Length: 310
Ligand code: R5P
Image 1 (cartoon, rainbow, N blue to C red):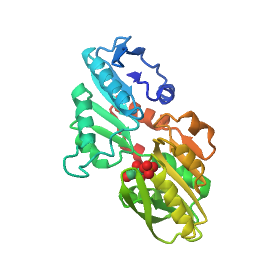
Image 2: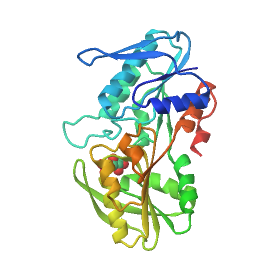
Image 3: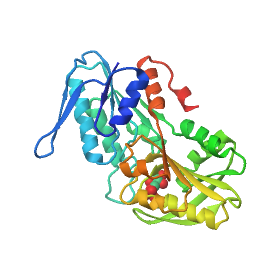
Image 4: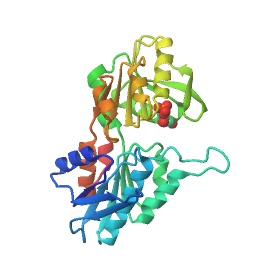
């Protein structure tokens, strides 16, 4: 097995390598003056089972291009099998046409990764599970819940805890969390008036006197969570925390979360946490290194990955 790290999340790649007790394959990524990416793999990978670890997070297009160029280099170097390990799959939210004459960019990105030469994909908490079908190669989609649900149970127990989906689209995910810790479920009926702005409309469920835990796949601007927290407290909740697998946290999101009525936000390191995230005590980061490392190990040994979903 060979492990290659892109530049998007080197600390996670190093933690995965440490879990697997393998060294990262030597490679260099250069930029030409016009910002074109040039990759050189500095070890023989002929006939090897290669895993390239790269989240397509901010800057999404640079990191995506770096992933594609690395896959191409590996294919031309005769790697036996190339697995794109994409802890955070950017563009996943563009998985349908929101209006006429708009793209389905998640499908385009899936095509690009496949055409570049990836033989399989390992990813985490896809925005929608159906995105697996955008690929005609095998996709293993891990979940954040096996990591985060025990953390919720350890910190809050399950008495008086209510799992809350911040929008109707996240109900299946929230139900899975609720089932894991034997808690009840509530839903926020959110209406987004225009892209990037969210508005909480209605809390569906009995939240009064409860410790509410919002669960979501992505926290981006933080608007969804902050508005949801306000709505839950206004409806009588005792406290509100949030667990989101991917901390996109763009723009002023960290400051918005820090100033919000949320007690705590827990994310994972699927996206490299910024300095701002590391210094705020409102946000805690759980590592997916062991989960992803174990999945890589099982793929390499052709054993079952599905038990990691339990
Ligand atoms: C939307 O469908 C996603 O699951 C998240 O709720 C959304 O991306 C969060 O975005 P923001 O933090 O900008 O409100």
